[in-house]
Amino acid sequence: MRPEAIADYISRNYSTAVEVCVGNYWEIAKLIGDKLVAAVDVRHVKAPPGVRFIVDDVMNPSDLLLELCRQVELVYAIRPPPELWRYILALSKLSNSDCLIRPFGNEFAASPFRLVNYMGERFYVALLRQNVTEAD
Image (cartoon, rainbow, N blue to C red; front, side, top):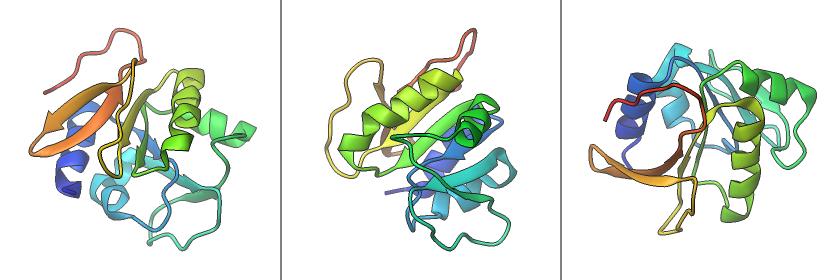
């Protein structure tokens, strides 16, 4: 995986983002810096300095998580379990945010996702916001 490519794509296309299902992988969160509003996981994990971390569940999001996601342009997840994709997408739809998922392996995402190949990296993006242009 090329975290710098995903971070570049996010930085070029979005001014704010929330990472969900962060687990123990912080590379992209660190690379996008101040564009990251918060990182979220269902279990408490140690966040790097300067990263706001929230314990929450994408399957049953709290009002706090919903409000955070309404304030950003992108909800993204890096290598989340495929069974959580629909919950991540639902969270994006509820908050009127685009959704980016970098699969763990060769998982396939159906509509509204489209496959993006960017700087040698592949991930899925669902453009859910209104009146937005994208830099390729």
